[in-house]
Image (cartoon, rainbow, N blue to C red; front, side):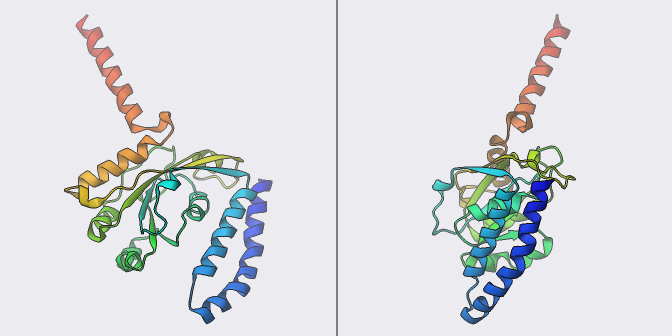
Length: 226
């Protein structure tokens, strides 16, 4: 609880200072990049103060000059402030249906898009059904999709819990997927889901659950035959 309060206190104190420093510059320069960098630094510092250590995998596979649609699982409120600062370029988070009114314009301006494709947080760390809209967007724009697996934030700050436990969160940036390589939105969605699922801890993977179900069925049939 102390670390949670420390993080929130830091954010509460840093916000007005950042506003006084950054908003006038942003207004005069007509450039939001400085404000964005300060916001990302504040988010990352708050996460570290909360005792969360972040391990990244695959970030070096991304071309910092390209625009991507990042699609991630979502299990905790701490996911955005620990993940967004890792992405090297300015990134907009799509969290509401209303934002579907302008994402194509954002992407064409070279701004990355971050989408939690389940629509809301998972209670148990397993993947929920995916929303279809983001895949229409990706195919329409032809922008590469980067599947992202967040593992560990379910432990440090589970859904419904305010206090943060110190711990390690692993963020896996998988190989980019080109929408043009898929004949339909359904196949694209299935592939993104498979990749995100592959990075989850074994006990949360659909592949693991399906394997156990198959084994159980085979055992039952063998017993019945005997």
